[in-house]
Image 1 (tube, rainbow, N blue to C red):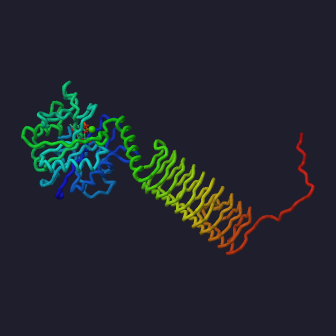
Image 2: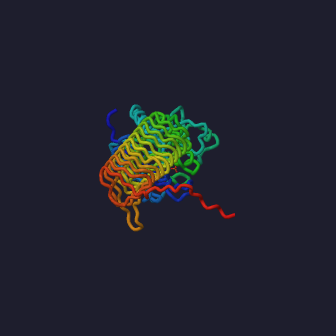
Length: 460
Ligand code: UD1
Ligand code: CA
């Protein structure tokens, strides 16, 4: 197929009155991603020269949402009075390049695929058509415009509210995707008249084309979910479920096992590699990325974080704005607060909180610790109950623990402090001065044993 000059008109000006929410429906989110960003991402895959977005009702909200994606080929036109899809296209037609092919798409159809658009375009070109409509046959065609054929040729579209009892029985519906030769569209849209409802329906263009003996063809869309249009809250809810299903299918293709999909929420912004296991009750949000062979056992919250390959995140773990190196083990019951960086082969265990700290390769903080504002080298072992005392009541101070340090259980390091490499602390030690390399730091009082010592008897 020779490269086409494609202009896409996306209709987003409507009042969305059936939603009853006082916002343009195209900015509503489905599992964290707006209807508008979904359609825009899809239509970019078709490589259009221009995307003309018709805005109107609360247009700033729509423009802001569209601009977030940073695309360079977006143009906006304003429809001041929302008096129909035909009027919206008429306004957009002023920006269309005459020598292009125009694809008109309703903005409220989030799951339309690039495959459907490309196949429609191929059908349009192959048939040298003047107008293509994406249509589908539905068991329940309620609310859709019905396709009226005569001797198999499409002659018009009648909207649900204008259908006779007989016409309502027609199963073939208008999916909301149209292809025109731009030159024709620019002239013919001017001839579109108001209907009895005092609105300009884009669908009435079909009768105009048919009367002009223009060639009208259809592309049959089989999967009805792909052209689900969101008119009310019930359809929005349905869209969440469809999206979750699509996400599940995508995961299967990438060898990602979701044990209990209904309890897992992974935002569309999250990057997932291959071969990952995710158990129940897991939320992953923001700019997070999970690399291959990671296992997230369950009951885990991850936001804006990177989990490198072959790591395991055990139950009841909270990870915010942190980086977890390869082959690491986290949890159960670990709280990794912002700016935590764990290098490779680290082990962070139960009831451990880490904040704004780097933990070097092969280092372990296995039990009951708080590590804050710390730079820890490699091969460090932090004994159970050890804590960095980083706050003096006024300011936060830094702790440096160098390579191969062994902190005995219940060590307290009063920051600012540097623990030299290869050093050791005795259990229960409280250090407030720097410990030189290769030393033992111990502050324990000398142990005394008093023989034959009895506790005072309890008062009766
Ligand atoms: C429309 C079609 C119907 C089709 C259905 C498929 C018309 C008259 N009817 O009906 O045949 O089966 O889509 O999804 O086109 N909009 C504007 N300006 C307006 C009015 C609407 O930009 O003045 C935008 C809306 O924001 C929306 C899109 O056009 O994104 C479609 O409008 P909507 O009111 O949802 O049309 P439907 O009644 O669903
Ligand atoms: Ca609609």
